[in-house]
Image 1 (tube, rainbow, N blue to C red):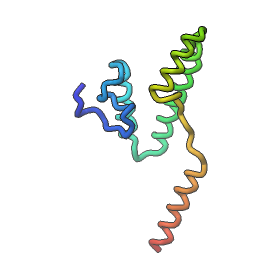
Image 2 (image 1 turned 135 degrees about the horizontal axis):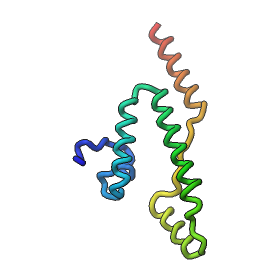
Image 3 (image 1 turned 90 degrees about the horizontal axis):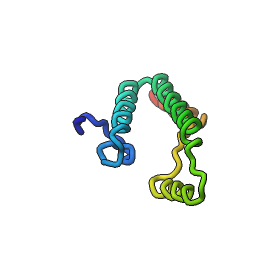
Image 4 (image 1 turned 90 degrees about the vertical axis):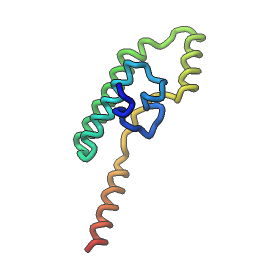
Length: 115
């Protein structure tokens, strides 16, 4: 794949062109970036994308990751060391209602300023 077709990302750990991704994950990252850019002005579509990613994250964690956890102290130590050295535990956070309200209040302020 051409590097010029790779969408820019603010998090360099998610940038497949930085060389740390296996080839099988590069295409996934590129496709998710493309999908997010295609619906960047549609919050409903972006919300659906986030829900899909969250569900995929949960399925992988519950059905594949948890059963694969090590059962010896040495192997567990190695896994924890890797997690610590390479960026921590994967997490998909949810927005707080407060963020929506802050956006709404700034929109209301802008509307009243323009009147």
